[in-house]
Length: 167
Image (cartoon, rainbow, N blue to C red):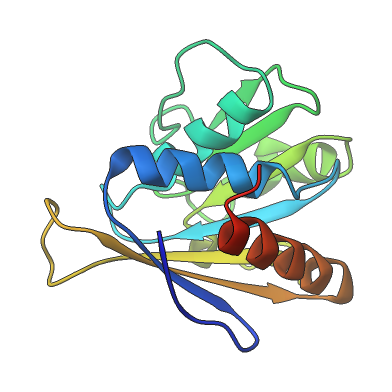
């Protein structure tokens, strides 16, 4: 991983799938029960790979898959991971999902495609994954920002973990 710039956000280059999974593990090391992480990026950018790394870091050994068709996967980790994907969700379906119930639990919520709904908490960690040169075979540019004081603290911790390589 290469850190490009870090003012009020973290911008890094992730060279391959394994590095994205490693980054997910480093991210998990700074998250706390009740945290919310928004994941944005086009299909195939690496959002689920990042969640897989977080789940592995928190002790999950099973298969981690995209919840594009199921809308939500729960991984029994400590704390549990609630992995949502709103790509195929209609805005009025969000209420039926009971999202608020999960966000109030002691797990960590990873939410893919948060832009497709307006019913989400304002405070969260935001991760944007971008393809470099629109090429799926090349590295990814990852931008991490925070909204809210608690998440500013998580971002500072993440910068240290990524910069030093500690996990």
